[in-house]
Length: 150
Image 1 (cartoon, rainbow, N blue to C red):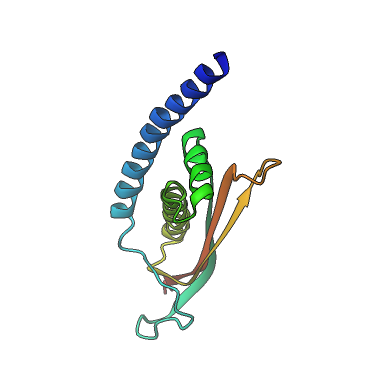
Image 2: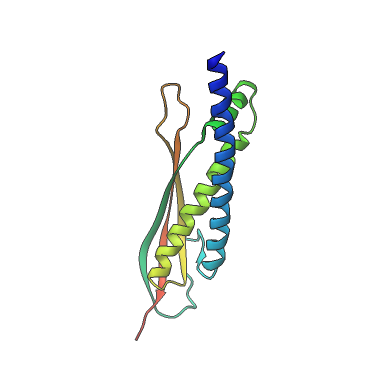
């Protein structure tokens, strides 16, 4: 009986605190995306030629986001019946957007006008014995182009 109470309590705490943290993070992401919208990130391999002389530098941003208990529980239920794991989709979306923002912020510090050849890498880390994901890492990297000052 006590195990069931502890389980339900952990589930409720994971849901409420996880939702609050996710909402705060999305709000922060949206604000910073607006601040950095002037820096374009594209996956094209060919830099633009009409910008004048440019200097280049490698920029990157990475983030590790942990899975809350509620999302892990929902993913476990979804594994029983199959289908999309929506609880992890929002986690990946936040991690991807955060990594791109950190990359753009690094480009901003270099006075870059854009980041081209942008790439994303993802990895699941801290898996437990049953193979359940504990955290995910997303790395965004690319080549920042800055005007050459004469």
